[in-house]
Length: 122
Image (tube, rainbow, N blue to C red; front, side, top):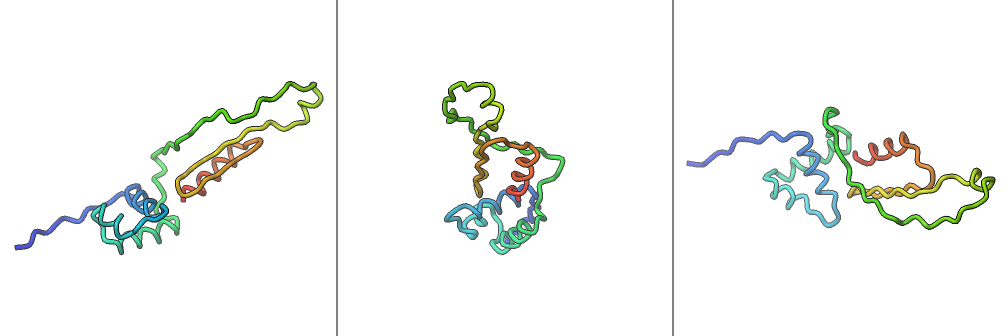
């Protein structure tokens, strides 16, 4: 007599994580599917949903992104007040999302950064 296993329903978050593993360099969809106990065809279907934006994380869950702070800013010598007012504030923000890397230099608009990160999370 064969033992039948009950199908496991995976949340959008779980499906999204499995799909994102397949985007890593050198990843094999078949190996990742086996590691998670899923049929490779199902993972390919989830990838299509992911690209169509249908595996969005639930809006009720907040997700933190890793941040790395470095002391890479050059030392600036004080300048006369007239020159300081004209120069835009400088800074560098590097964001590594695994499948994409973004570097923002100069003045960073928080709304713009939020839009970029949301776009890259898809």
